[in-house]
Image (spheres, helix red, strand yellow):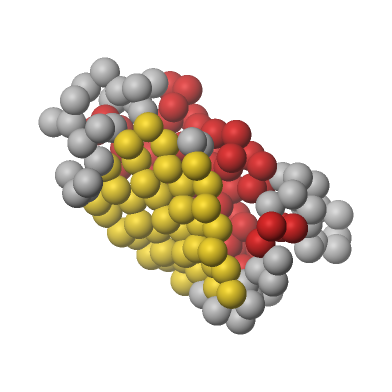
Length: 147
């Protein structure tokens, strides 16, 4: 199925840009007239995916985070968050609740679990040294049929 609208956003992996990414993606999906709960779900999932890229993907370095979002005619949304950071050696292990590579105790290891709870589907592709791509999809119950 071909997307009826899409956008791409790229920014430096600074923590301050997490809120920008969340607001930009939410603004893009407003055209579907999502419920308050659906919008909250999208914002939370984006926050987790972008934070993972910034904190875990680039660690103490700066790099680019790229978001690509699409809207499909059946009110299904697609969001891809991609970094070119350190990558994840064991994606299956990383997706386990409470698993974290953070040694400071500041991270709970719930990022992927949170994304999975708010989206219909979460896919993660990663290669050590090459980066990580997180794909989030969700079908919205929007009242408006794609203007």
